[in-house]
Length: 141
Image (cartoon, rainbow, N blue to C red; front, top):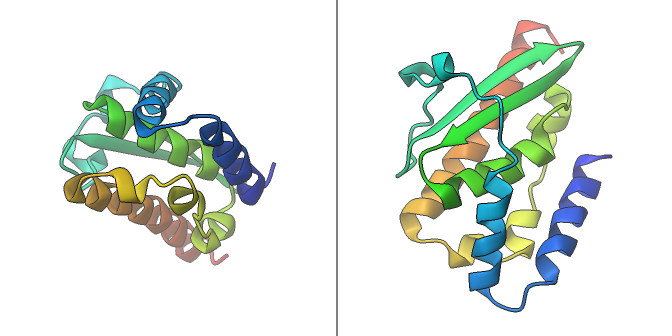
């Protein structure tokens, strides 16, 4: 599944909900998809700067692809990072670096977040892309 196909799937999933309370409930459900975040990675090195809540992001580079692991202490934020992990994880650095994450606007997420949560979302995306650029530079991709 491509990044665009993953985004289309998310847009489809959110389209079944009539209002934002249902969408928030779904985001909370999505937060449960994040598993296997090791306690040892809950440190300042993996903490995303610019988020109101605490969000930790750990990466793993293997066989030319980046896998992301994430967690948050806030349930809505955890659902947001779960969506990003779903779309960007297990991709090449080039795919991540060049990804246009249009699903965020398409499902109306940005317009229904507080300014601080919206800034946090931008920070999460930025951090994931920074990992991709770092691997591109490190491995001359």
